[in-house]
Image 1 (spheres, helix red, strand yellow):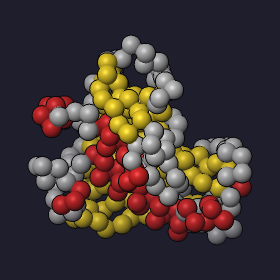
Image 2 (tube, helix red, strand yellow):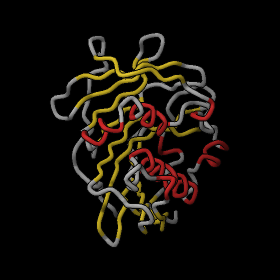
Image 3 (cartoon, one colour):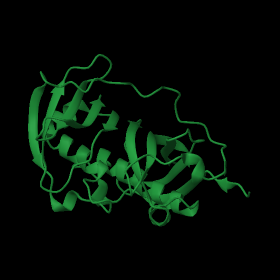
Image 4 (cartoon, helix red, strand yellow):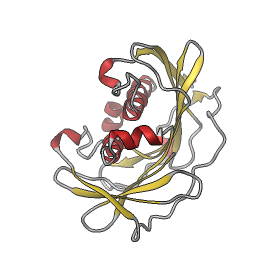
Length: 243
């Protein structure tokens, strides 16, 4: 079988619509950029959304870790790269980087699974995952941290009602919109004081239009704080450790 290229580089630019009040790229815009290039690369190796639909499968992302070393500035010319790692039985890793003139400004690691549309169960990666030339290492060697989903005594941050504009082609709340809603619980002054540069995100359950989620926070041993979104049944649907 011909080996497929495990990576893709796309030339992009930091546009004003991606920027905050200081003309720097926002964290959600970084995640959007990761999501966009993932789709481009996946389609080029036969595992994009359309190809997965034909196989009766769909992608779900469970974990993302993003680290921002230096925020891209408005109109920066960027090299955005994504690459995949050899898959395990039911999950695979996709990595990302954003660079300017050879300097890495941000990178990310993410864990994905493919679910069957007929029963919602994980598909076996060997059935469809590409035979690729795996030549790029992960951007770091740190494992994802396992964090408790018990937030009963956490401090309230705010509520968010899932709107029509939050829904993606999968019919549920887009992953990046959880991060937008979470950051919207803080004032601009608070966000600037925190200067967030690292997020360890866990997507636990899907939310749909009309759902109301409560954001709560608690202290963290290794990060600035841990934040969760809890649905109306009291179930944690989203978690993020930030610093």
